Amino acid sequence: MTPRLQNKERTIIMVTSKKTINSTVSETNVKHKVAMLIFIICPILGLIFAIFSTWERYVTILDIALLLGLWLLTGLGVTIGYHRLLTHKGFQCFSSVRFVFYALGSMAMEGGALTWKAVHAVHHELSDKEGDPHSPLQGFIHAHCGWLFTNYSDRVYELRAHFMHTDKMARWFERTFAFWVVLSLVLPATIGGLSGFWSDSATWSWSSAWWAFVWGGLVRYGVTNHVTWSVNSICHMFGSRQFSTDDQSRNHLIVALLSFGEGWHNNHHAFPTSPRHGLRWYQFDPSWYIISTLRWLNLVWGLDKTLPDWQHSDKLIVN
Ligand SMILES: [Zn+2]
Ligand SMILES: [Zn+2]
Image (cartoon, rainbow, N blue to C red):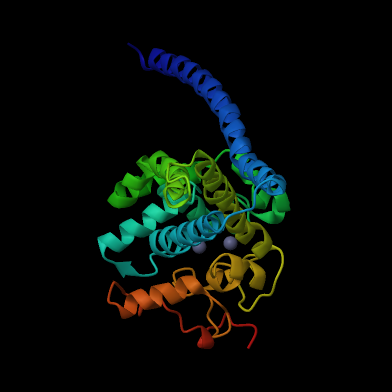
């Protein structure tokens, strides 16, 4: 067989494969977009439905407790587990601690651990430049949740493939992501249903299970996701800059309060590996307070290398 023929054959194979890939990609695209639309709309419908239903039924303390409790736990799973530990390696800890944070992060329903890490790593690599997965340079909506309807860049796939070889536990969480999503919806429903045993009926309550699912499942993951998306959108458009960084990152008090400290986003872009984002005493950063407490309990360590000497940094532009 001549090299020329080999080349021709290779071209035919490539064209055929490209057609197959293209049709698979477009099918995947449509399915992905529909799935994202359902994913974004369900919490909004759940919230509207729950609010209108208060004419007939009061929101119970259990509904609110599940909403706030699971928002707090899964939110911290993202901020401490996915972000400061997995992506930026801001500290080291025992495997059991890592497992708990990755599990909670997965239950936030913001994507598999390594997909999240790859998207975020590319965000830091190309912040507010071409290739940034969610820069507001393409508009606020794109930065907030519009980017979920677009394809990941080759760089995201490349990094994710690399991480799949380097982090065994996160790889396991990436592969079992669907289980954690189902668990995060079934868990509040089960707690709600079981609450019937403490009521007058003393039986399983389908009504309580349903409303616990709506508040602790649907509305909760909607809140958690919108808060994270606000860091990508609001904190690259509005707020103050205390450090000179090569991007549009900003500190925003309201986002910081809602996101357990992630809203000190300009600080974070200035010192990405720092597990502490609220660098000043008045910058409320509960994720950091928990990491500090875990350090005090000797459950995490290795912060000496990652905490920045920001007061003496030449990036400092506001005293
Ligand atoms: Zn950013
Ligand atoms: Zn980051």
